[in-house]
Length: 177
Image (cartoon, rainbow, N blue to C red; front, side):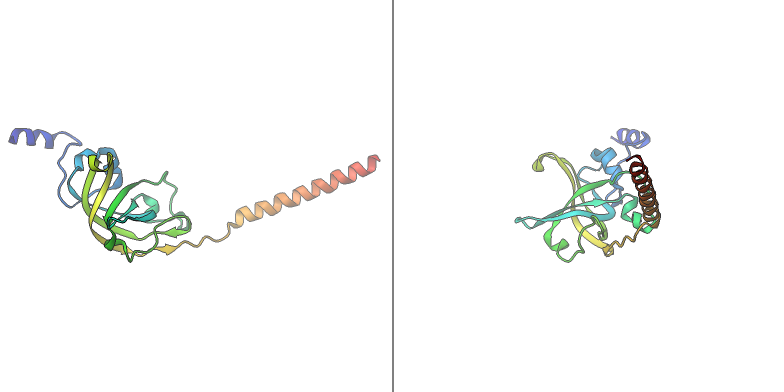
């Protein structure tokens, strides 16, 4: 048994997960089986919607890509698609949370600890974090996006060019008649 454990630890990508380990969403998406039925911690922004169910649970999604910590309107980098996982927790944990992130809203930045369920047969094969603890790191907020003056100036310039062209064309057409 010890030899098997030593071999598993020596192989890259097969290290055993530790209880409470901080795991990025990308790690769960790339190697979810490694964390199956292990208590882990995930940090990120709650996004999408809160789905409160009659059985006392709430479903939502957590996103931990660069947008979760540095929104584009705040000068954050464009780093690709959003990456998130499903989250299931007791409704009581989510009762007083700020609205989830979405268009013009940054959701609360949270730390969730719970058991990772990889292809859970009791939930139709869905993978999700079954949350037991929630810690709010930062509250959510409304994202204020001001005007893009470069786009505005370009629009005014194009409108001006269009008016000049229209008047010129109109003048040339009038001279032919």
